[in-house]
Amino acid sequence: MTNYRIRVDEDLCIGAASCVTIAPEIFQLNAENKAIVLDPTQTDLSETYERWVALDEEGYENLLLGAQSCPTLAIFIYNEAGEQLFPEM
Ligand code: SF4
Image (tube, rainbow, N blue to C red; front, side, top):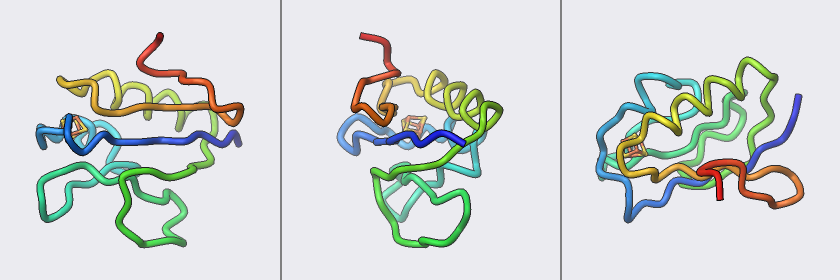
């Protein structure tokens, strides 16, 4: 498992929900129609736009597909060193 920092920019998110369709284990819309980042282990149920998430390779691939599907590129992914993995700089 590898740790990733996932952040949804709530100002960029337009609630299109493509991320939720592709990666429902990670993204869900809140009452404001913005995507929040879930804890895949469901240990921490707090609503947040930013979270550390531990994923295996398959989980990361799916996260990436979800982030790539976002029409406004509102989803940012960082590695443990703080480097931005997506969108690619
Ligand atoms: S795909 Fe992008 S705009 Fe749509 S809910 Fe997810 S983060 Fe928001």
